[in-house]
Length: 128
Image 1 (tube, rainbow, N blue to C red):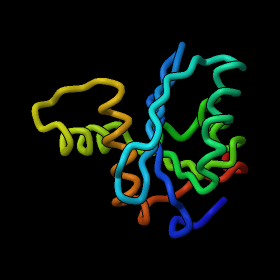
Image 2: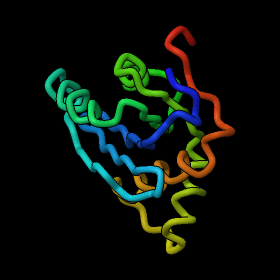
Image 3: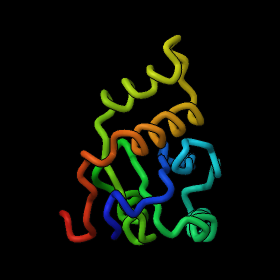
């Protein structure tokens, strides 16, 4: 686990039952990776392969428990949970019209982590 100050990339996972969407931005907020992967062993292997390019990665997700969180922690990422209401507020900052789609949700939360994450609490693998 890295300190927030060590992070060079900021990502977000929009998780679902059958697939997950990932967006990663750099220190300037530029999108460097967008990926949809299946909820399967092959999908998670693809995720782990793609994030190797970002060894100091923080990821925000709209939950603090469950198998997706466990897999993120096992992947070596700093994982930051966010409440759905807070995620909606960040999404509305990026799209005041109220538009919602998976890519927008991921991008807005990745940006939020980049700009505000220094005050957020990262999960640890031993957290229940």
